[in-house]
Image (cartoon, rainbow over the protein chains, first blue to last red):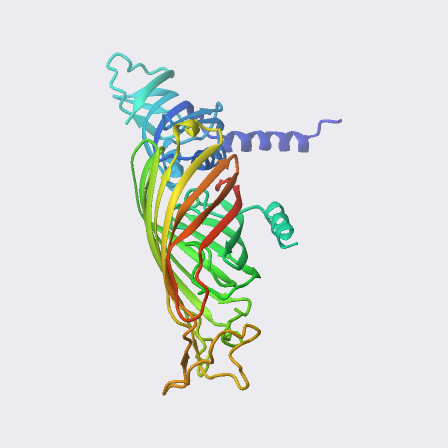
Length: 140
Length: 307
């Protein structure tokens, strides 16, 4: 295949477009979320299926007895915790506290999950480094 | 033959119920947005056999729509009240909206809810009568409210609904019986079945329903009506009142039923069934008393939700 100026231009344009539309990486990696109201097998199945359809979700495990959802996410997702809580509310249940593992940066006193626009007060005075870190923390 | 037909229907067309609650009484469950269930129910009460397909779709967070179209496989001369909370007792197409207007989840596996139902219907088959030809078909409306507490171990629901029929056009005052149905349901999941997801989920209920069925009316006695229509036992209808309406004495009645039911769900399928026995049944006129009623149903759920 010959390399023409036209094809090179198309390639550069396509690459530019890809960079332009690729979101900054939000790095929620794992979420353990307490959910109130899950009482039956179909409830669990419905919630699981609904969350499974959210972009960036790799797997969902449900424990009815513990009222716990365990969500594993793929790298580079655009996942938002607020969307997850909304999805659970839409299914008729109530999301509570969570343990979150995410990659992000400390900005002032808050830990910001990159790309998601969501930040948390994790209350760790010695962790205000500017570097990107992976952190596990509790969310109320 | 009818039994085989029923078995075929049950196996070929998955499902009834909301997968959450009782077989006869009111419950509060609402499908999540984008979820669908398809179900069939076989309903039987002394001499009357009905088959009821039902489709339910979750519209919004607390709003669902369901369409059911039960029809007679065999009919009797009992008062035609509502068969179950979610299924008419007459052969009719019904569209029912369910709005869960109250919803609290105070703990793990626990919910307190209240749901309002409202729907419209249209009769699809003539309802045979012992005291004359069938009444002309009419549209109907239905409103009901249910409230309940559900948990991993126990469930309690109470509810009441009212069904009323109107007329399609002026001057035709045939009217099926209006009916009031109330229910009280206690559910129990034995510890033996208290498995974590994904395992079969089995629950047992004790359901009690009370029905008050009004009298039907006919606008004018059809000419040449002997009052028997192959049944022959009923006395001739009384003369019309000043409005030209005959209130049919062999219609309506009251009844109180109670009995065990069960619900078994696994993966996307729910099986449901149960039997209610008459604690007290007093039909008007010469209608036979009802001693027992039963349902069996299967439901398939398409739980995908929205993207």
